[in-house]
Structure formats: C-alpha cells, structure tokens
Amino acid sequence: MDKKADDKTMEKIIYAKIKELLDGMVSVDVTAADGKRHELNGNYVLHFGEGRLDTTFSEITVEGYTSTCDRQTKKFATFEEMCAFLKGIGAADGKFMFLTKCGGFASTSEYETKGRFDSLDMEGILNYYRDADEFELVDRSPVYEKLSDGEVEAIRNECNEWAKLSAKNLYGELAPEERQKLPEFEQLWQEICEEVAAFLKKVKYGKLKKGASRFICDHVGEDTKYSEPAHFFWHTYHGCEMAAMQCEQAENFKKAEGKEVIFENAHFAPLLPHLISSRMTFIWHCTISGSPARVYRFALNDKTRAWLKQYKSDYDLEELQDLALYKGGKLVFSSCTHEVYHNDYSDK
Image (cartoon, rainbow, N blue to C red):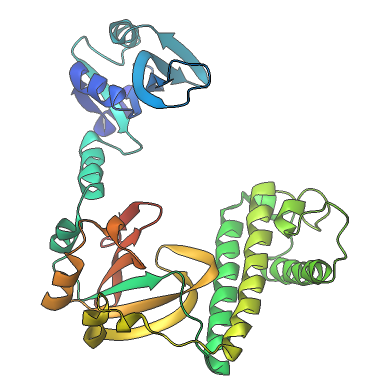
C-alpha cells in the first residue's frame, strides 16, 4: 500500500492525545511509511486486594505499551520508547502520529461523537430526537393473555421468518467457494428444519444419548448433517431450533387465562391514554429472545416526554424497559436496558 494513497484517511494527532486515548483503554491504528498499519494499545494491569485470596478490585494501571502489525507484537516499557519506534518506521514525525483508526472508528472525531452519544441521559436522548413521534417500551415478564389462533399464527410466522432471514443473510456472507460445496439456500434450510424437528422429538421423548446436549447447535461438527463452515452452521441450527421452540411456546397463548394489569399500577397509568398498540412477541427492536415479551407502542408528546424524563437515563427504566423511538414509523433510536447500550438508527 502506498502511504500517499492512504493520506486522505489519516489524521495527524499529537502525541499527548494518543497517550490520553491509550491510557483510557482506547486502541488506535497508525500508518507507517510502507503503508502498513500498526495497532497500538496500553498494557493494562488489573489490581486486586493484597492477600492471595482477596479478590477485591482496586484499580487498573497502564504498564507499558504494545504495537501490533501482521500478527507480530512489540512491547515498550514507556510511551516515549514506543514513539521513538514509530518515528523510525514513519508512523510519527516527532510531534504527530499518523492515525487511521480510533477505538474502531475511522477518526477521533467519529470516536468522540459516539462517546457523547453513548453518554446521553434521558433528557439528552429526547432532545436529540426532537422529531420522534412514537416510542416503545417492553415488558420482558408479561402476563400471558389468551390470544386467537390468528394472533398466535402471526407470532409463529414472525419467528420462522426471522430465523430464515438471519440464516439467509449468513449464507450470503459465505465465501463463493464455501457456498459451492452446499445446496441452494432454500433446499439447505428445508433440510435443516427437518433435522431440527426430528432432534426436538428425540429431546421430548428422552431418546438422546446419555450426556448429550439438548441443543442441536452443540452437535454441529459431531453428528449433524451439516457442519462446515462451523460458524455458519452453529448459528443456522441454533436459529432454526430457537424458532421451533418459540413456536411451541406461542401455542400456550391460546389457553392462557391471565389479564393485563400493568396500567392499573399508578406509576404506569398515565401512559394508558397514549397507548397505540401492544403485542406479544419474541422479537423486538434490540433483541430476539427465547421468552416472550409484550411490546407497547405509545404516542410521544409533551405528556409522555415528561413521564420518560422522570428517569435519569434509558438504563434506569424498570419493568417497562428497552426504549425505542420512532419517527413516521421508522426506528431512529434503540436502547437495550439490561445490556446497557443504545444505538442511533436515524441515518440507516
């Protein structure tokens, strides 16, 4: 790679900023004169209690730095020692380093923008998406209410279609030489679904070998019909099996006798006049689950914005969680409360 051809993608960043990033546990890539990229990291050491059995966490310190290129890693006792090495290979000039990636982003600006977005509190989120007109909250432990045959069939179709689409996308990402060794996707998917159905019958009637896993994905590479590429088939068998199990659970909704009472709770009652819809599902904006949830869609207006603002952040939501914002029916913001992350979809 010619360095000049790569100049448009490089940033000249002062040494002090690079050290600040590395000491803050952020990985950066720099480009040398020969066009090769070197990944820089701090050597982070976790400190615990003084006693051998004391696992009380104390702090993290940076004790040296590393530069990795072509799977070869060089270690440096000090930041200055690493800077001298990088200057020698043309990845720095004595004052600046030639950065091509920062924390997985193409620039420090992109990285810092993502950092500011990640730290938005509830008020900040609602201000960021001023034009959003609807929002969703999710009850991950809903009361099972009786659903009609048609409603259950819709849930089953959703689960099956999602599993198939996910597998098809993975199939499309395989290298051409890997796909050539396999049947066309429709045939492959049908065969895997039939194999999963037969396996689940063995599980149901106790016909598995002693000690064998009750999940077919754990059998990939051992006794499944297909096994290579292992990554693709593990996820494909897993997705198909999960869909089958979700469909079986959905059948229970036909006989359920529960009653939705969440809006009888004084805390959630103010949301009821603004309710647009609610649905039982295994799939919502931030996850696919082995257990059903109820997703509520509300109008986003002055009253519901005020209700949301009682929470300091989207991660503080309780009982009704996983906030999503929509504009004109399009998802623009998605938060996963229990995993503590949120994403911007406004440009996607």
